[in-house]
Length: 307
Image (cartoon, rainbow, N blue to C red; front, side, top):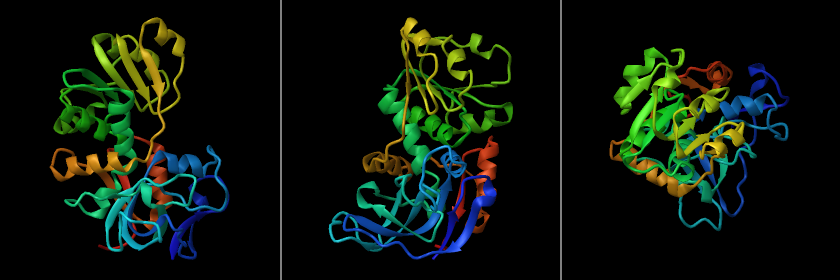
């Protein structure tokens, strides 16, 4: 099969198209024919060696496809099922025509969308879902502010929070304001505006996908008893504790029940994945560079097989 393989850590140039064997599956796994793979920041971070990963490996941990074969112990899925998931980042990934995935990481893909659209969901969707509802404990009527709202995680977070019944605030550059209001944001703030944080009050939950000084600046407007959830590293926890605000980091878990809940919202038309660009598997290096450069509206997706 064709796959993108990495033999040494470095820049986009280390992404090499190769002919490699189709993976063999264990009893608790499924072999998935990959139709599309999402591209995420974790892809280039692992490519650069920021996280330990044995070489060589196939990157990409965001996929939609169809099951070709199931292991002897797999009961919930069968050949021909359309599935989607964010598989284990410690294993070979989805920049390939086929991938072996543990069956307990799989969920049925949303029936109302194609594989390219479904591939944009798992990692960003799971991250947003778990930030808001597991770590952030968001309830209807609360006020949430989402930093970096036009990105992959942010676009899902805005829609999930609005569905929950929260008052949704978002930070983004001015060019993305109308777009985010179209997704459901009640209020959009230009983060380029000096002192923007002084104009905000009484926020229950903040989602930080940006890092830098975003966390400390957000402390000005989070209510005592509020929560800041970051997808990056929590910093200066002591000053948050002094104000009675909980600062927490998070690591995205692949939970089929969360993927199923998200798929239901997509099929009901309540959530719409946002795709910035679709590229081919051969363009994986270009795709990673676009993501690494930042300011992508939604997700970049690699198309691997024709539907």
